[in-house]
Image (cartoon, rainbow, N blue to C red; front, side, top):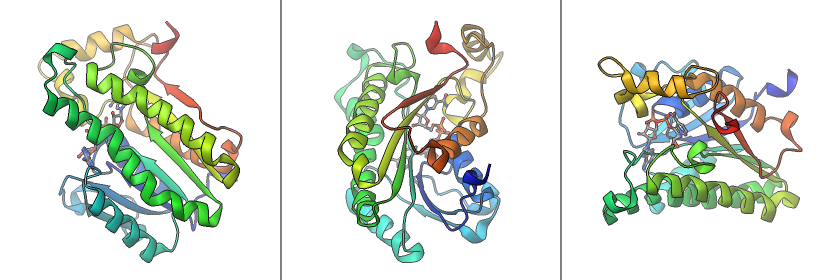
Amino acid sequence: MEQLNFKEKVVFVTGAASGIGYAQANAFLKQGANVYAIDVQEKPLQELKYENPTNFHYTVCSVTNKADVDIVVQRSLNLYGQIDVLLNTAGILDDYKKTLETDEPLWDLIMDTNLKGMYYVTNAVLPHMLKRKKGVIVNMASIAGLVAGGGGAAYTASKHAIIGYTKQLDYDYCRDGVRANAIAPGAIQTPMNKKDFEGEGVMAKWVAEETPVGRWAQPDEVANLTLFLASDAADYIHGSVIPIDGGWTMK
Ligand code: NAI
């Protein structure tokens, strides 16, 4: 599809060293985009094997540090002159802790990373999109943003909040050329859930069994949905939450 060509487009992605963010970075690079990626991990790039390293920049930066986020977004703008697509993907799990098991530092860590970090990055990028009257934002929610059981108290609260934030974001700016949507993945096999696959992989098998389609998905499947959502083909999709969960939320 011609619309999935991202040549000369600039994509800013958070959480790009691993899992879904890594797959997104690769998918957009394959479609010809310039990608500016950030992550807290200091993994050397050559180990990451991004598809087209000439169009790719990577900076170690935490989404929880507003000053650093502002600097890196500005650096990306200085380098490429624009940001067409923002992918807010960085996120962490809370080990499925119930509220009484969630101490305040854990609550703050999850909220600061998953939610406040998204707000920092969005507010750094949005003014430039508004100036050009053009931009697409794709926020990473989860099935835990729609139903219980996909995380603990803090994670589930953060992902529900991301969905509300995304709707309000689109509502407030859709007439100014900015389009925001959220993705709600189910069981995606990434380093985030590598514990589930350890040993006999009992947990991983249970999750697959509980998923109507009977399997986990790979991060590329989420990246492909992201390509579509970020493309002009999805121009009428606004403030939506798109599940990619093997049927988990249809039960
Ligand atoms: P992952 O753990 O493989 O990747 C997450 C990346 O975010 C890591 O590279 C990590 O270093 C980075 N990160 C963490 N804190 C950061 C910070 N403060 N600043 C910048 N980067 C930071 O996990 P995965 O699975 O790729 O998750 C990506 C997103 O997808 C997360 O928001 C997660 O909640 C969401 N998700 C994942 C699902 C899954 O089954 N894997 C299901 C539903 C949602």
